Image (cartoon, helix red, strand yellow):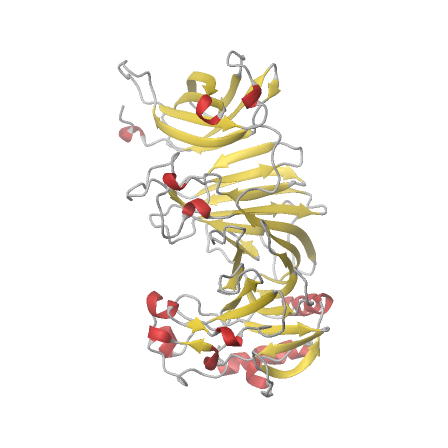
Length: 529
């Protein structure tokens, strides 16, 4: 930030009891892993909410993204060569189950984040020091950076491996974690604003993190975050426990600066370029490229829904209305290495993320935003909860939820689940095709399917918002101890998306979760058969 802008921000925040930033506090020496800035100040979650509420009443001051030239000029490879020195890790020599290490600003991560340690209800800011980092092949020379540069975020390490981190809060606005497979993938955000509308979306940023020193022997660590943007401020609490699934218990208090048309609670962001159901952008030697392959929903009415992801030609926004949903998340169900053949980033090990609301979330919609992409380095999938309740300034909005990261959903539907969705040209093999149609083959397994006799009269229940459904079938699929449903869709002349719905039933009772899909037929001039 420009110094005059920082002075303005400091003056406003000081009036709210804000802990003064690095540029305005004396630096005190301390024989520890990190250096403090200024004196400890009282801190708890209630006071953080008070600061966020006060900030919402003030004009927003956008942080400067200007970086010193030695850092601003770095490309990806040189920025990645900057390494945090382990000897400066927070809680390094305190015999605790957690340690924290800090990220350096640079490349596209340009917004500094203030870092604090909380001990016995007192918070002390952690000083940035270039001595904390090994600049390696970056070309940045020691002493070339300002002493108040700031950090880009932090990562957490757990006792079972102080080399590989288990959670990361980086780039001011996003965070992620790993399960037992120790593989990063999709990300979460604090909040999403106007995502999928015909104007720029807004992901409010965390301007400060407060890391509470865990008790000796504790397997849980608590981190607080202060959120800020042009539209809203917020106070967050993350109570985190590593394990087979990494669990984050999250409390969020939101204070709008203005009315928000589309607020996204508990947003997840991911990447889907192509897979077995959508090969529109399949121009790579690898069979599939995606962080996640579907949106899973457990509705307030106890229906389980599976919606395979797509890489659309144009922006797609889908809303699944619900009342007090039990959960939703972006899943990577396909965990077969052979389906990806990627031995560098291991898409088969990417974690699922599951949101479990706590308390009364009321009526609203789980929204899925799918954005066209030609490159696997861009997140093009967003999922979040959008409440029906209007979000207006002057009010406090409280949300609590559990976010689980791991190889699978911690909750398992009692019915069979979708194992694969495949698509291709329709028609009857060996017979001339006289019109265009598109084939869908959906495999189900689990639940009651394995116990069914082969001659069970399983019925596929299929509906389409437009067009005609034909050549329907359901038959046993011994390879997965399940069943395969197949059908063709004959679209009408419109190229607009067609919503599809399918489940299998026997004697009037459902055997499977509900499979939903949004199929976009090619324009009539491109329907070759």
